[in-house]
Image: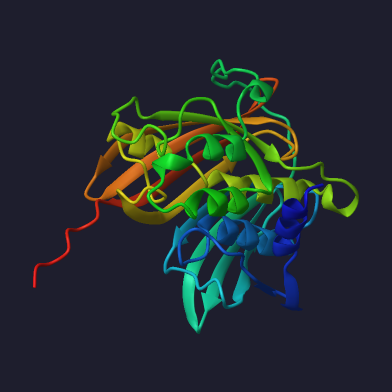
Length: 298
């Protein structure tokens, strides 16, 4: 297991300060706020710790209310909305400096059999034939106006082995492309022992799901993204549905596309497949996407 993955697992191991109150810390990110995937994953950890282990999460719906402060702890308060015969519902609010920064509703279901169908997994090359994020960043380091960005981006994603099927927005900036992006990903190390927990696998995929989902919006407009500096933005809301079991430490294909952008908001939607073609997760997110304003003349 990589040191970066150990650090991420420690980040998701929240401190329980009361029956339904948990506290988490943050890690540095490329922007001066807490990474949205981290907050969503931590909130799901908090919710999951109040639910029986035989009821895995089947969906979550979240809103990012305020930018999080990476230097301050986040307190997660869980509200036990409902404990039914088949479903359990939890609401979680993340608070910093006395104000809510994040809201999550999550639903858990006991395992049941039922009707089965799914859309087919798209064709994709073997992930081991694709460059790692670190290799890609080194190859295209000259595309970044700020030379400190590539090593910082590599460090931010070091817990995950993430490989782009085609050039990401920061490589193809200036070229308008189909609004679709695909990446393979898995944790940078195997989960074993106490870490091999089904809830933790779901929380890790929740963490990764916020990394690249808005890329397809950028591709449609030839923008390179926040790391290039030709757009500014943030995640607004995030929803996930967990269809079938998966492991976060085995290869997963994240197929992402954008059907629309307008009003300084862009919609990204994605499907996450296991390597053997099972549809594991569906994801939808709307993000704030703005072009930088020209500085005012004196």
